[in-house]
Image (cartoon, rainbow, N blue to C red):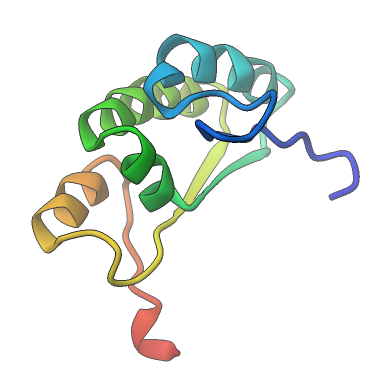
Length: 108
């Protein structure tokens, strides 16, 4: 994990990518990660925060392009959403962007 690059998405952090600029700035940031080689992984931690600072539409638009890019390069995508932060319809729309959904909140 020491070599794992981190791209921060935030309106408030210096040097971070603003949530409403995920496309194209976020895509440019993860393209080198996707191209590095097969078998890698991209973790989107706190998609609910990105949605809160931007919009669900912006995040979904980004995910569609980014997940396609990851798929082409053989990269696994993992996303985490804080339980209870998104309304059920929004969570369902977000889940549709991924092949598999695991609800781990019941295990807490």
